[in-house]
Structures are given as structure tokens and as C-alpha cells.
Amino acid sequence: MIKLKKYTALTLCALTLTATPLTALADEYDQKIADQDKKISDLQQTEQSAEDQKAALEEQVAAVEKEVSDVLKEKTNEEKKMSDLTAKIGVLQEKIQKREEQLRKQARDVQTNHDAGSIVDVVINSKSVGEAVKKTMAVSTILTANKNIMEQQTKDKAELEKLEKEAEQRLEVINKKTAELKEKQDQLVQTKLDQQVKINEIQASIATEKGQKEKYEKQQEEAEKKRQEALKALEEQRKKEEEARAKAQVEAEKQAKKAAEEAQKAAEEAEKQAAAAETAKQKQEAEIAQLEAQQQEQQAKQQQEQAQTVTDTGASQVTTNPAPTTEESKPATNSSGWASPLSIGLVVTSPFGPRQDPTGASGTQHDGIDFAGAAGTPILASKGGKVVEAGFHWSAGNHVVIQHSDGYYSYYMHMVSAPSVGVGSDVSAGQVLGGMGTTGNSTGVHLHFGVSTALWSGFVNPAPLLGI
Image (cartoon, rainbow, N blue to C red; front, side, top):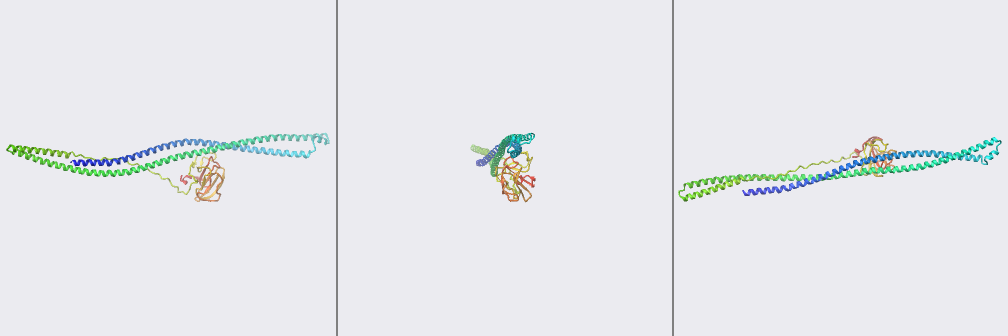
């Protein structure tokens, strides 16, 4: 009986020692996953803060765009004033030139017809007083007219000088406004790029921490699997021990019952012997035998009680929460055959579709995508084809249009200088067409990339073709 109790105690101890490390390991992974959740939550709060800052920056960008629009309008007004002033200067110069020719002609006439003469000569050579008066009045009239012309000529030259100074001042204003416009454009592009970089960095950090959390979850899943296998083995061991304990208890009860029966028989036999004894000695012996029989009966009862006091034991059960699962989204692949039109990463500053007109001359429908970059950044053919346009346009600036074999046309606008390819040239995908600039109807350095189904009509959104 004592051996059975010791065996049960050792088994319970083994179960406890085996389950404890498994429980501690599960708690460790739970803590790691909780720590990752906190990191992800903190990063998501930072991302939300960045989004809020982005919204505030977008308001600032809108204000900067309005300032750019206002400066562009001022530039247009100054250019119109300059044009009007130039026309006025041209008219005045023409009038001065005609007067100078007239004065030179009159001077030649006077020199030719009156080279010896003066008014006195005219009077002396006159045949009559009336003729002398007429000739005198004619010469006086010519001199007076010449004097008036000279005075007007002097005034017009002074006016011309004044207008030229005014033209120089307006030219200085135009240059100042142009420099201000360039500064605002650079500020707008830099603000958008910096904010996009910041958001991309936060999103990359969130993706990294989520990947670490997924790693811990997989490790926890493997640990939980091993723990369940260990618990199963322990449960089978516990069942075997339970069966052995039940069998031992039945055997103990059987032996106790047998001992009680034998003790009862011995007591009855002693009692008969005591009753039959005729002498005191026999009676004494009978009493001693009866006392021994009672002691045996008492021991049998104690043995039966010990057999009934055997208790059941069980192993502790440990439960854990199932490991959560995560999903990964694979990015879409581009199988359209269109490549990036830039040698750098694509940063969209204005997508395809309706938008607010930035200059007042391009309309509210944006027929392409604007990509940011530095002046001179190489512009590449997105797909092979034949060049059907290459030159300058007041709105598109220096630009190239390529016709492709599948019926599409691609457009590359606002290049910094004349394209490096000509009309009729066959180009391949990735070939350099020119450098990024801001020529034409543009408010800053960028590439306007467009795609259409017909030349300058039927424009479609290029984003799906580029895989963005």
C-alpha cells in the first residue's frame, strides 16, 4: 500500500515538471506577440499622425499652388504690358525716323534752291514788291515749319527714352516674377516628395514588424503542437497508472476480506474452546486465544480501511489560445509590355483625370500622369515604336509622340531642350528621348506622360499599363 502511494506521488511530480516548461514557453511567445502588437500599434499611430501632417501639408501645397497661379497671372499681365509697350516704342521710332527723313529732305531743298541766299537776296532779285513779299513769306513759312518739326522731334525722342526706361523696368519686374515662380514650384515639388518619403518609411516599418509578429506566431504554433503531443503522452501515462491503482485497490480489499473471515473463524473457535475448558488453565488459554483473535480481527479492519483510503490523482491541463493567422497580399505584376518612362522611381504629383486647373490654360481634365524629378533626368521610351512628332508646342513644350504597333500613342512632354530623336525615327523601349524640364504650359520640372488610342485624342489612364 505504501509503495502504491509513493508511485502515485512520483508520477504527479513528473507530470508537473513536464508541463511547467511547456506553459512557460507558451507564456514567452504570448509576451513576444503582445510586444509586437504594441510596436505595430505605435507605428500605426505614427502613420496616422503622418497622414494628419500630410493633410496639413496638402493644405499648404494648395496655398502654394494658388500663389503659383497668382504669380503666373502676374507674369502674363507683365508680358502683355511689355508687348504693348514694345509696339508703342516701335510706332514712335517709325515716326521719328520719318521726321528725320523729312528734315533731311527739306535741308537739301533749302541748300539747293537757296544756297546763296537769304531773305535779302530774295528781295533784291524780285521784279516787284509783291513778288518780294511772297518770296519772303514762303522762306519764313519753311523755316517756321522746320522749327516746329524739330521741337516735336525733340519731344518724341524724350518720350522714346522714357518708354525705353519703362520697358527696362517692366522687364526687371518680369524677371523677378519668373524667379519667384520658380522658387514656388521647387517648394511645391520638394514638399510633396518629402511627405511621400516619410509615409513610405513608416509603412515599411509596419510591414517589417508585422513580418516579425508572423514569425513569432509560427513559432508559437509549433510550440503548441509539441505541447499537445506531450500532454497526450502524459494523459496516456496517467490512464495506465489509474488502471494499476484500481487493480491494486481491488486486490487489497480482497485480502482484507479474507483476513477478516479468517479472524472471525479463529475467534469463534477460541470461544468454543473457552466454553469447553474444564480447568482454569484451559479457561485462561481460551481467553488468551480469544484476545488474539480479537486483535487479528482489529488488524483486518484496519487493513480494509487503508485499502479504501486510496485516492485518485490527475494531471493538470493547460490550455492556450489558438495562434492567430495572417494574410499576405502579393503585389500585382505588370504584363502589358509597358516600361517605366524614367530612369528613377516613379513619384506621381498629379494623376490622370479631373483636377483643378493649375495655370488657367490647360483645362480641368488631366490627360496623363505627372511624374516628379530633377531637371535633366533622362526620359525613356516606355515602349518601342515610330516617332510621329518631335519638337516644340506652346502647351506641351519640347515633346515627343510615339506610335506603337498595338495602336496606342505615347506622349512625353515639357522636356528641358529639343528631343534627341526626330520624326520618322524607330525607337526601342528604354531609349533616351530627352531630359526632364518645364518648357511650355508648365509650373515646375516634371514629365507629363500620356497614352491615347488616336493622335491627340482618345486619351486613357496610363497607370494600369505601367502597373502603378
